[in-house]
Length: 360
Image 1 (tube, rainbow, N blue to C red):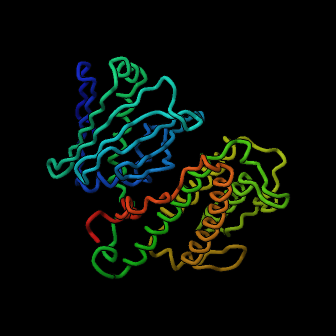
Image 2 (spheres, rainbow, N blue to C red):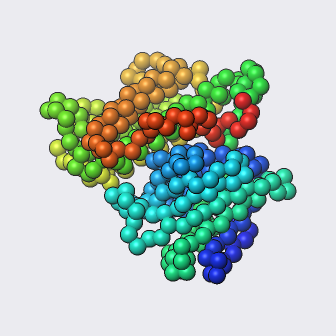
Image 3 (cartoon, rainbow, N blue to C red):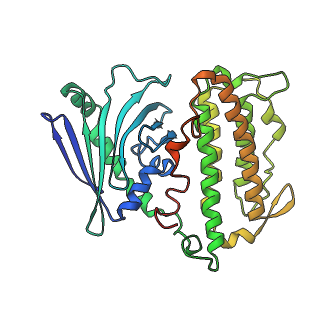
């Protein structure tokens, strides 16, 4: 287990967690900087996290929710107070209610994450400072110690899952197979980003507006989700071995929704379809790119199919974002760099976690 020590100091109002990893500091830092990696370990087992915002800059903000086995959700946020890459960063860490406002009766903590080389790997020291003894006892009673231990216990698998080693073509120059491997990495990142954009947009839409039509011939957000989910499930189930248009799919009914399903049912369908797609893409090897598959009995190289399906996903995720922003109005939280904040984002982070920092 990565966690080697937990110290609680009621007088200083702190809890210190010490963890050790075999990976170098830059790799561990990248796992916290990249929301797609962070969400794979921030929530303890059984409570996976989804980050809908992660502005890893001083003054930036992150928002996330964790979903329990029964569909219950716990929401939270960070506000970044200080960043000294790759040595340390400091945040305010708090709870959010279902409406996105700070949760009543829940404290906000100050957390500092420090990283240093140790025995060829990394030693990480996390110090949480509570606003009062009552807050410390409240969070301990809620299981914060056990939760952090369990959550950090998942980091090793994330660090090891350089799901694929970074290809030498990306780092040094073109070598045989390198471009194919780089393409698969970028394709996986692209699909994950589309899923994250959709998640972030859906989280800002009221239950009622999931079914609102902007005109009689329009599709609601719920209908777009159902159609995209149907497409992803059909195309990526048994991706390499069966036709992408499955016999049990009825595309026309994806645009009919007389029953107005609940948010929970809509998100369950959404998440399941993306899980199918991402799982199939993760399983691909470079040699698969030149294999031929069928979609509606039309032959496609795998590389062609991936590009076609990414374009389709982008088209419909864009529709979801556009409608969500329209319905949210002034309450909308930007999913890209907000207006008048470009200078704060002068150092790009799009490839964090895919290519190690400092290698390009």
